Length: 486
Image 1: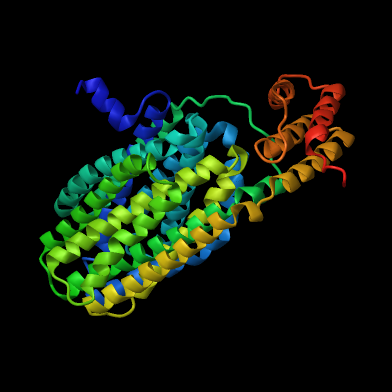
Image 2 (image 1 turned 60 degrees about the horizontal axis):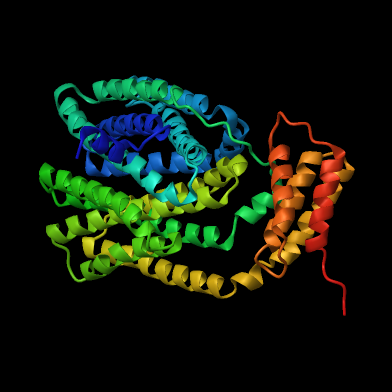
């Protein structure tokens, strides 16, 4: 494969390349930060003390995140027109936090800085989602784009982990933090070079926010909560179990490599499966894959089986996450993607913390831990499959397009009456879209007129007249108004 083709398969093409570079540098910085914290909080103190430190870290970061989450989404949405500056600012903020940790690793001030890093990390993830939606025109390409970004981030993180471990052994955690800070700053500079496409954006309101939280997204989020809780439990129970049994350092490395390898395969599998499976089916597969082997582990766990489970847990995490992100990016309006992303990111993070908290205070035999994992995966899978099937069976009963279209037409008339002409045209054309393919069919001529009017309404430089809004409402009323009783 030519070098250009290889780079294209890794980084993508067009405006997404700069986002890939920034995301990859950020992932490398995350790796340096994680190695530094692991070396200072976990391995350099006694097992009992490390449990206390890790538990305190989890609890301190969990509660404020739930409080701050409602602020992150609206803030991201508010600055969506300058997303690259928001992304760059978050990376630079994380660079400063890394430097601050150099002097606070063994002090109480470590925890608020760690909290700030966590919140900034989650906000960066939400901004990345909005950037992907802004840079990708084809909804069917969202899964592949998310997977490509994550694959490249996995590669840079894997390389960074090796370098960070060597640096940690030679110099200590302070220098790994300094290098991590430099990488975050480089990611910020790369983010500034992202060229956003200036596309027209529809106005949104609370009704659109409610409509975007469709049953498929809500149900898929339940599946992701099960995955994230299991991941949090597995990571911490694995670390403490290996340390309790005094396993050599290379076993930790093999487990981490197996998890990272599974995560990388999950990114590739997401692209492969998207042409054959819906996002909900991909999430179901992500839950089922590790559940089979954690159930086997109840009878006894060997090191090879533990490494296999680590790989499948990594695969489960990335396969499910790519599918869920693509589902949200495809359904949620761009102007409220930040709020939707913040809501679910918070739920997933709290699930991960919950799993970690379950694994940290007490030392469980590894077979008991496999039982707990199985009890997370299997009921979660059954609930997810049942809910998905019920939603599919009653999809048309749950959402009546004609009723929603009538509501849109009413909103269009109200917007016209108060002088919101752009919103009136958008609501009127949306009402016709809802009934197209249902009980009514608008002729091509009327749809073309509405398309022109909607384009003008979405163009901030165009002057929309009262007559144009009235025309859009009149066309919609011919097809959307309920039929007269016989």
